[in-house]
Image (cartoon, rainbow, N blue to C red; front, side):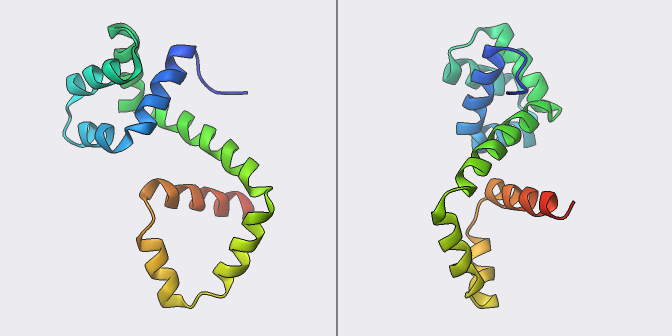
Length: 122
């Protein structure tokens, strides 16, 4: 089960996710044409497919698909016993060490953690 409208959209989402820092920079600097060119080069998609994917990425629609895909992966990983060990260790970390740990995490990882907390509190 995925939210992609086509295989090319899935390929585009993966290429954008892998190169997310670069694509987020294009977005911040409003460099849409450069983003399309980069996506075309990274994904091997045609110009139209790359443009359509960047159009969705630009308005935030493609990002939600990537997060949904990551959410499913996190749910699978959460079933592994290693996660239980990590949770036990995290509970024993003092506040200052916890702050240092979170400051080192990427925004993407922090958003994923936030999603898990939001779902648990529903």
